[in-house]
Amino acid sequence: MKVFITGGSGYVGKATVKALIRQGIGVTALARSDQAARFVESLGATPVMGGLTDTETLRAAASRADGVIHLGQHYGDDTATVDAAASQALLDGLGERGTYVHTGGVWVYGNTNGVADENAPLNPPLLTSWRLKNEEQVLARASEGSRPVVVMPGLVYGHGEGLIKQFLVDPGSDENTVLSIGDGRNHWALVHVDDVAELYVLALNAPAGSVYAGVSDQNIPLSRIVQAVAQGAGRAGRITSLSLEEAEARLGPIAEAFALDQQFTGARARMELGWTPTRLDALADLARTH
Image (cartoon, rainbow, N blue to C red; front, top):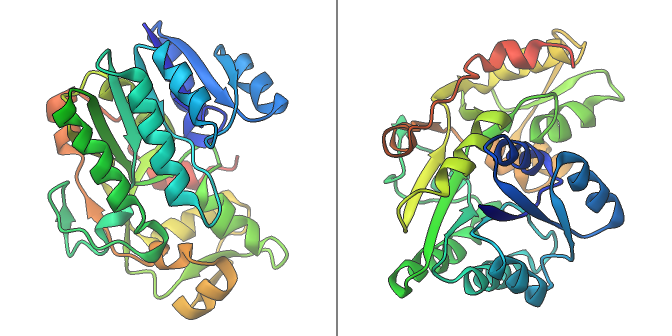
């Protein structure tokens, strides 16, 4: 079996490439630079030069694969347009031969008011509102014979990388602190990067039209998360709490998403795909010095 992946040199992408190869699956990976090509090659994948705007390259690469995992994202004012064109090109190239796995995210559900699943009402923050139409178009292809599946990760952590480092740790470096938002009582639905990578592999065998929340039932208050993060960053107890307005000014639109109160269950993926997350102590992982 051969799988084509976009975003293979990224945080979740590299873990997914490794998970695919562990299962004996051949991997080709989109690479938009020589550096990215060398990196995915070091993981054991074959690079395909191009970017998400190169729809002919995407279509051709997908046509030579037995499955596709779309993890890449184009950043800019045209993010939604590029993602829509890329996903349709990948679906066109793959045809009916295999499963196309599309990346979403649980942020599109907004505040959950307790533990929710994939059937919860949608109420996305501005940052991810564009995803709704694109995911709808992707899933609609199931009626045409394609095999689309959407995986919606929670807040991904692990190995000292990801959004937590990028937006809470790094911006506080100059003041030797870790940033937080509000009073910290809101929950984050977490998942370890290696666990969600395994979900992407399993999703290649999911029924067409399926949607899975990629969460490991670790719904932890932000206050406890940032305490652990501060310890892991060598800044124990040094936390700077920002109001939502201050966080938006400092971090941008992602602050609204970080302020959501979300609790999720990944029971559907466990039941239907046999997914068994094993990294279930996020606080200990985050508190570990990397």
